[in-house]
Image (cartoon, rainbow over all chains, first blue to last red; front, side, top):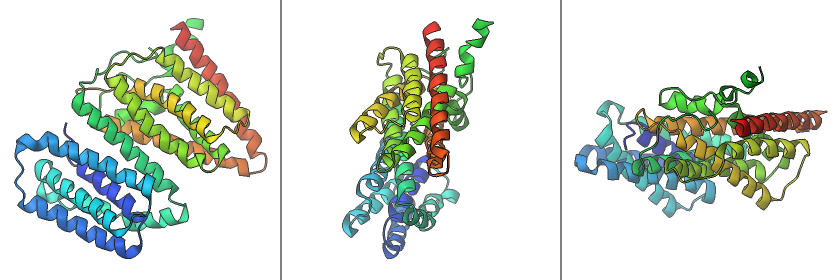
Length: 161
Length: 186
């Protein structure tokens, strides 16, 4: 199971969706915390390559978990929100350390900063867009976690061919 | 001539492509059965209004992913293609009849249909060529089709919009009948 930049970027996007439903101040604080956690882990943590599958599995679980907070909980209180952000930062840091080049290190954090423009959409459309997009992230996570456990049949004749 | 007209490739032409994001993204778009069903989910959601306008497009991808896992695992599900065709028929009729299903019924129906559509995607997931990109592509494409359906469904607020949308539902239902005929005949 690989994912390159896709995994940390989608995790960053899930954080953006979650933060977009929070008050402005918490968005800024959450984003700073995410950047600090992710960059600190990426810089200082030494991740054995044997752990790659486990790290990526945890990253995809975090994508699903973070996206689920958007659909189920919407506005979080401060402590759970910080825990979600720290969890995301940890797995972004680990997966970037494993799979990506350092020149792309800030990409997931930049994607998470989309929370600011997203919050305008969330507030004007009752979070409908954020919740729908969060469900896409959950679906992708479920499929990719499944892919880690199952060898897919590949292209056989189509179901209607 | 009748055999050519019933060519299954016309109904669902998303295979034969290499894997990857673009292939996954194109798969629901090139398969008219998937495409009509996804758009119909959005239209029906818009017809039903809150909370289903949000719940249906949120529920569908998550359950579709579970169906995708069943497809990857090759768990036997009878007549997937018939299930997909029936989904198009039922959704088309529901829109044409302006059927205001209760929340539980609409969600149950959509979840069952999502299993069939997800199963078809999962069974065709390429194992060699970027299956992660493929998965992301077809989920994104499916979601965008739902949103397109919601936007079409919003036309019910316009003069004659409700009638136009119901006629569209009827056309979708007829197309579903064609897909069913193709599936049974295949």
